[in-house]
Image (cartoon, rainbow, N blue to C red; front, side):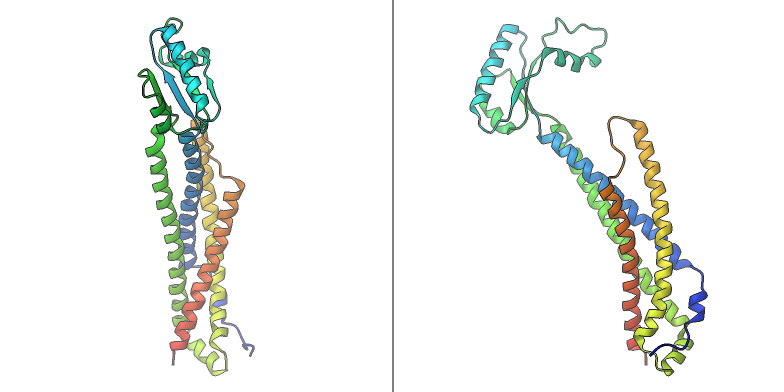
Length: 282
């Protein structure tokens, strides 16, 4: 059956509190999701830094003994199948590394350690291999960043939880808005029922306005989130230090999909609440 007239009051109502709440929850969800995506790439880069490179240091004030130990280390490394390519870091590079920390002091006469860089390997195995050489130390580049990696993982979990909570809140808000609309239009809905309208037809009328308001609120929330993300990115870019503050194309696609998904969730939640309420009505 085709309804003889729409719900004029619903059709003419301007977006109200529901649209504002949808915009707020959408903003919160997108900011949390953007933080999760940004932290994912940061965690990946830090994880690579903590595992990809290993340094073997030969620390000895005697240059001849230091060079002899370096040769012995290279021989032992050749016997370890699990070790990737190994090369001795040139002395000029070592001097360049420490030069900023000893300004005004010449590095020519300093007994600098010999560094051997490995592309891969197990630090524990290497430490056991050189345990008889007291002046040899094995360190994983970026190993001290382990706590930072775990902190980033915890922040990702928190931001993901905030995004999911915001999405759940939008669904609950849509349910409440649908039931409020149903209560306001009780008299008109009674007439429609008397004319033969089904529960599904009535619920579609109300969810139409819910969908419109949800779309308006989500669009406003997306616009606000976009400005906040770009503002933060510009501030991070000013810091420098090689940090990439921009989200990739894939991340932006995910944010857009989440925005549409939030609207769909709100409409679905409203539809479920309306049908459940109408079925319980006498």
